[in-house]
Length: 76
Image (tube, rainbow, N blue to C red):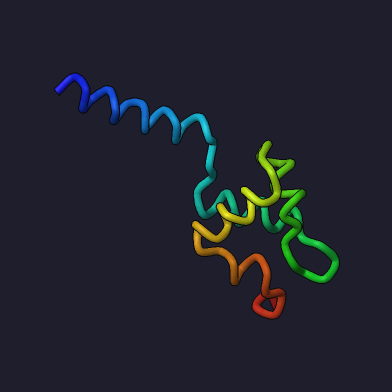
């Protein structure tokens, strides 16, 4: 039981340490870091979150916000 709880606590602490934002927070970061053509600037989002641009792109994909971030036609 102790080993099971230890694994669970480690997993939860890793989630807290990564600081991965939820969907609303990520949308806010995406909106703040749009290029002139309307697409998301992954590197700028990464700088805001303290991560690499590729990681930011993966997080956007994981949160299913790719259409929101990279398709400027939906904004009009």
